[in-house]
Image (cartoon, rainbow, N blue to C red; front, side, top):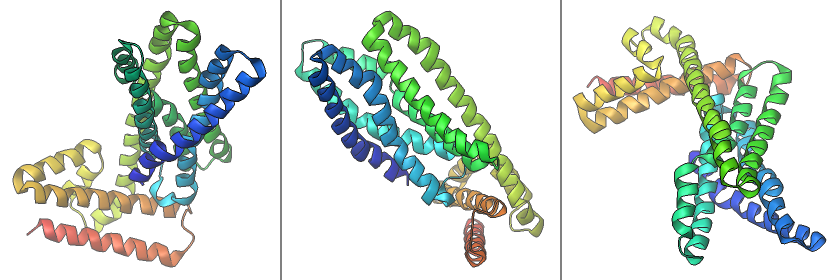
Length: 299
């Protein structure tokens, strides 16, 4: 799914964005006869709506059709960032190519603005949609389920429009002010949200792996390590230093399998699985994989 998200952004979303943005700008120019109006329409109105819609499409598909891979805010941020990075990669190639063929000095300026000052602008916008979908997945409140994705998507469009408009309309001063007052705070807020999402995931893991600790499937030390990102990272590093790359890979698979088992149980507890036979089969497969990895590590 990670590769799918990146590929969608790099290929599908950029294709439709180019097609619709160009068509819209031509239509505005034909109606107004004003090249500046067409450019502003493309930057401030068309691009935010079309591009964020194209990137959001795959997130909504994941949300509705890949429920077992979309558990909350952190997944929304990861998928949103990847589809946006794919989009930004293709878009940057286009901008850098135009700058290289343009007037002397354009390429360094373009690289500074897009590569140095705002390398994460697209991921930041699309993360808003991902956060909204993640909140909808986590909650049992119907109003939040409906409104959170819509608010997140609306915020993505607004932030994109403000960012594009700050440079196109306001000039360098407004652009810098927007960067400091909108982009930097938004980036810091997303970092806080990631921290809260990681804490929530740790709580889910501890809650739904407690029965495995009590049955002796995992040890007390493993239970404590699995319940936090730092515990998992520390255990993986220890495995690398003591047993080499093979031990590190085994420990990483152990961490992933245990976490997936916990979130599988979380989804079951919230009624997100319809077939009880599938539920039992999936749980048994996770437990067998966990036992196999435990045996492999003890050799």
